[in-house]
Length: 423
Image 1: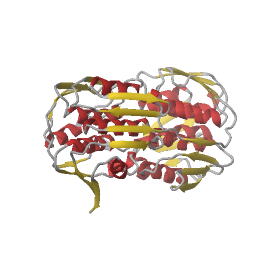
Image 2: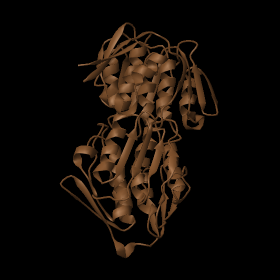
Image 3: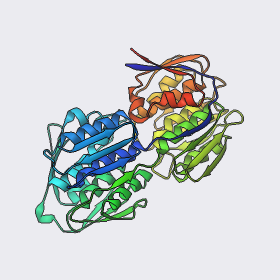
Image 4: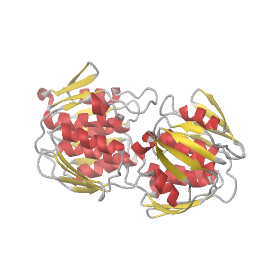
């Protein structure tokens, strides 16, 4: 099991290109199952453990997949699917795998998908997916840890209205996929507005789907008979870019990130500005410079365009060394403050009260051994260790590898001192 040994206290400096977006690549790869003839080519795919799991999942359905890691390209031929079973062994490795339910149902008329696994972040129910599919006429039951779904052919062709009580990123995508093929129109109310949802819609449109309203709370999908193979490039990952920016701020550095839309990082740049950093943004490039000690700030995680929950741990790491008292509220997931205890081991002063963390900034953190509990918590701990004096060790970095391609090597390009060790 790999670990990072981090010699902290070194300001990050330089320019770096962000990876392709994991949260766009995974559902788009799942959506290639909707194409019943020809080869779909997905470019700028990040090289991650979760991507490898999705490739294995596609192959388990009978798709022919070529994964060129050197070129960051995946080719998928889903012409001859042989199975509608998404097995527990694969789906349990990441919650995002549940997004294959919609494509299988639309393409094959039935699907059997294991309830998802992945990071432990409290309740992350799939109820929104199931209620949405039922509203479209699907017959769904749960048995032995699997969701078993079938299309009700008598309802095919009717218009459907799917209303989400709460915005759901993957729920929105699953319904979009299920509605893409066949006949009739599906309208989603209170749909997720994340940039990755727009990316998914853009892929579907490139493949011939009729999707309107992506990026707003109301999305309309008019079903078509078939989708066509196409070539699509994954946009840059705003979460990886945000990690670099917050790492630069926490270490008192200066970093420019390319290959990402500034519009996807508006709230992140705003919080960095409030903490006293100089920020700039132009086409596909964002920069941050921390000239002095960070200032405390207030932040609340919220669906896009709010501050992203997936950067909450990274922001907390920066807050631990800011001057004053910061308050950070988590509104998306339960139990997503697990990294706070690990940051305390580094000397951070953090108090958790229900869904709010109160962080009293300290002048310096001190190196020690910590453990990553999930992808984003691991990234936050890396940032805290970069800001700490002396040496730290981050264990269980396989979590980090699920969402970041060679994070240690990329940060070292910016001046950090991280050594990966395999035990």
